[in-house]
Amino acid sequence: MILHRLPRMRDGGVTAQQAFGGTLHVNERYSQLHDAHVSASAGRLGSPLPVEVYCHSLTDDSILPATLRDSGAHTLTAFSLQSPHRLLSGDKDADRQRLQDAVLESINSVLAEPLQDCLMADSSGNPCIETRTTADLAAELGMPGGHIFHGPLSWPFAEDSAALDTPAERWGVATGYPRILLCGSGARRGGGVSGLAGHNAAMALLEGHRGTPY
Image (tube, rainbow, N blue to C red; front, side, top):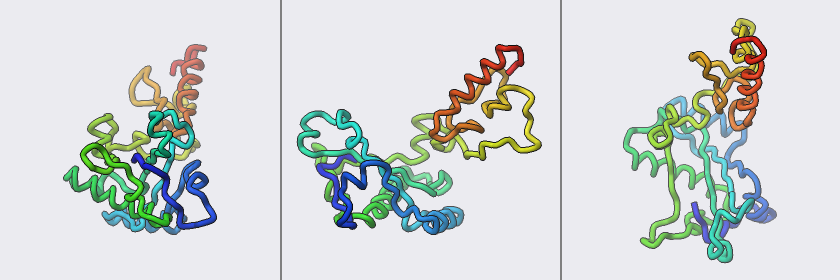
């Protein structure tokens, strides 16, 4: 989203710059995450939908041209939780609109004004907002199921029955293919957005070069 200004917060003691300066967690109390998970397991979106919001332009305003920076414009990126791939109907436009409406409704619950009123408009008068579903990510980026972590995350520790014969298995970067190591988000240890999987793959490779095949 591109906004002509940041919205005012419902909590008058918190400025927009403070709220959006890091990651803004919206409707993410444990009880809300639990209820949203129950809803998703039953085949429907949670209400309210847990959402995380990032304002990258507060961290680095060089992502905007000078004219927008000077006008007070900002970018917002929202990421919905508990909205798995299986909830999509297959109608891409309808799915995008349904998820977009749910995300905006959730964010608006902590604002003093509708976020829609802060959105800039393009040359055709359309709001500057772009929504991508898991189906879009699967089609455009080749991510299986549109999963940003490339698959379900797992606990980082090795189970008692886990094979740990090779460096790759010990470092949690083994794959089902010889001489191919996993250094992305789906790695057993150091996955998610930690960035550790690349380190672990390199360590497994170095250990393998010291004499133990990886």
